[in-house]
Image (cartoon, rainbow, N blue to C red; front, side):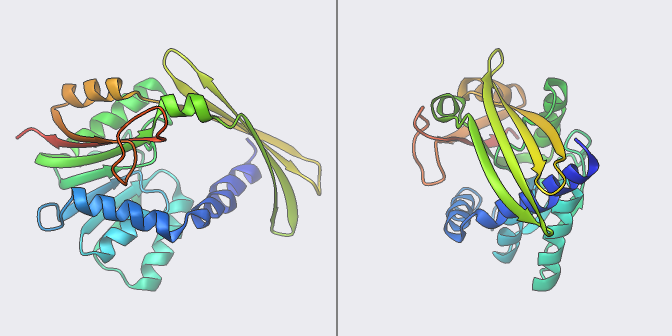
Length: 253
């Protein structure tokens, strides 16, 4: 993908997505996290691949001591502007690659939300998982969330097209999705068309979709006991009709 398209993807398109998330949705997710991670017991929390800091900032406002990181510098800069304007002191966000994050047994709890592990190659995903698990102190907790592959297979939107105006230019964004098997992955192909210049830029990414059976094995092999499993942040059971798989797991002392 050409540089201008990369810039467009990492700034306007992501921020547009961020702004499309409702306050009600964020409040529901934060309420769920609070219930799983009482602040008196889990004071110091890591947001593993924090994006724009949507959850980090809200949790800091509730009195948690928050650290978070993301590989996208634009996302971190965007979050830092919000933090600075709000004068929030108990939060630290920074640029970091999840495969190179190395703060072992540093946090009371770690949250990893919205399939933040899974966007890399299989070996890189393994390293990211290892770093995720090692970040938590013995006796600590992880709240982990990914897309449910069974739901994705049934509800995949194979093609979407949007017209977006940005910086006095109009773009058409074409987004194609498909499911790959063995292992289950979602392939996303994105095409940017600049209507002013006619220039076309393309990119793609693949997300690994982990089943609950695979996740149970991964957590067990890394020394965690799963305490709860949910299909949503309002407490639904995992099923093919629920979009998410949410795991709450404790690290063995």
